[in-house]
Length: 357
Image 1 (tube, one colour):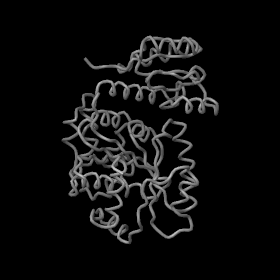
Image 2 (tube, rainbow, N blue to C red):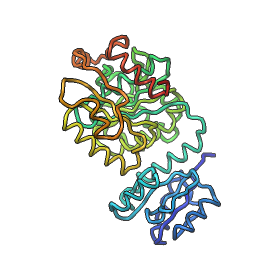
Image 3 (spheres, helix red, strand yellow):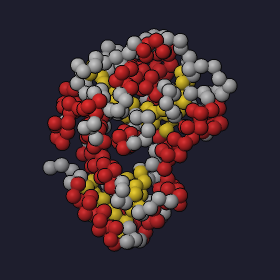
Image 4 (cartoon, rainbow, N blue to C red):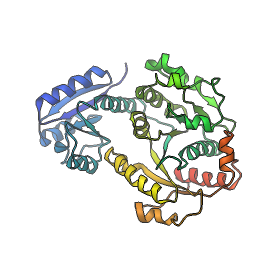
């Protein structure tokens, strides 16, 4: 029998509590085991029942002390105070009711998966750019190659069905290779074997779940990527997620499961400005503690890698060297060799992500 996430609700208004309870129970992946109308009742219910997750209004989350339960902030309107409270208590996400109820259901389903799979093999790394052209696709594809170079069984997931930049950058044969769209017939009963059957093998030794052709892309939903990422980490050593250009629902699915989030910066004012805005957005969604920076030094600039620490409060985990061969290799759908200067930089990045340095 499939496990479900055990959830305690906390809302001052009984009407909202009942709506949320009935909605979550109907998903089949969550079961509300208790409700509370104030912060003391909520804390006591969590202490006694030890739920997998707490879903509550920010006002009731201020006490903290949730004994390891995942926390999701849910409110009927968005405010700066509510967002700040969600951040302070370490909420995994902030949702508006009822507009974000499907996203909340997805988060509850991911908690259910976490209770089912106690030994998760894969380290999941999400890669996104501070802005278009920052080199996020370049970093994601070469990072997958670097993991494979260290003997890891790595899967790269192109999570942008609209533009499919990672799929193009790999040089995958158009219209011939299988894609995430081929999983749709079995999406409700997906297993690692199903996913393995549609992975495309790259010559560098890693596998890729490719994005579909434009017509099929219209049929792929965030819930489909959620289903994939629910089973994929148990069948690999490393998973690299190429996140879409904007933080849409599909992007949030990837960010929710990621152990680390790499934001790719270029050394220019616009990239730093957009990265700060992106950080605010990711912080409000509860991802601030998982973020690292990678500097893509694509050209000479007055801004230096040292400015990353000054502006963002932490050093970059990697500074990629300028390489004249990057553009030509990307145009041909090829990756740079691991033995070159760039390859060595990615090797050091993987070592750092795995805690070897």
